[in-house]
Length: 396
Figure 1 (cartoon, rainbow, N blue to C red):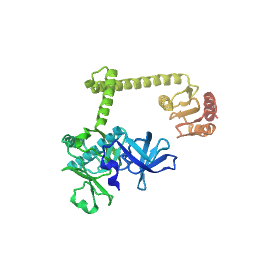
Figure 2 (tube, rainbow, N blue to C red):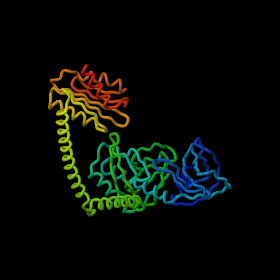
Figure 3 (cartoon, one colour):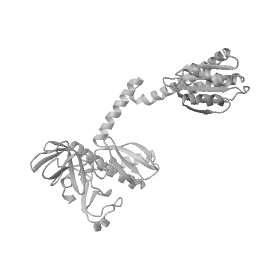
Figure 4 (cartoon, rainbow, N blue to C red):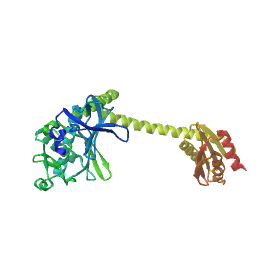
């Protein structure tokens, strides 16, 4: 029976003895053993599996398959029938802290605002719950976190109780249960009654501390990321290192980092505007220089590693300055050619003639209208050769 498993009898048991009842290899080639009883918790209910050793061989995964707990090993175990197992206590206790913290935070959201939790994930760095709401305010997050930490600080007992389906009516459960046999309740008196198959500490005080880290929208739900116990210290250490590094880079005290970043962003935006104006001035100068050296009505040039957006802007500046001009530009990169062709309002030639001629030669794609076309494709010829094809197309 489930209730007889060691991890339910005593979640604090770090070593145990058992008999090997069987072994096997799964479809992925992973060897496993079956034990007469086990302290290793198998993955389930949002809580990851335990790790540890059996007779010194690493237990890398634990899964329940068809009612039997499979202990997957790093190598095959050749041993006597009676073996000793040892769980990774640091991992187990971390999971106990995080899982109980989830119960407390979930109950806080329900008790304060009626927000139900619809899923729970215990990850390596953070824990998350999905609330069945579309939005949550900063004030609501603060209130739920405050209540959760009050429950932790009160060091209330965390009780477990096995009940039958008929006995459920005696308890004010937080949510409906999916199971109907071997029902295990986890109870924080006068605060939370919930069906759960995970491992938990004996009191809320052992959760240590709970901190909400962030939230995100998830398909009309809100995902709340948080950490408990030792993970809060890990988060604090990491954030302190990041803040300290930012403080040094900005030559600002840690409590002045946000102000220093704001000043830096303001300076950056000013520089961006200045750079954009300088680019416009350079394009204007380039436009005038090209018009001075035009051949009849045609202004043509080839460039290396020039963006097509710059070519578009330059071509439009030219035909706006001289409505009789036709601008033909080509930009080449390592393996690609791109072109732009534009005409002024007084020029009668359709630029579609150019794209119709050039695109098949480049095995390329493009588009536009009678006044302006653009496109690009493979580098099947030199840029100067492509310019000549474009010019000849409208000259003939």
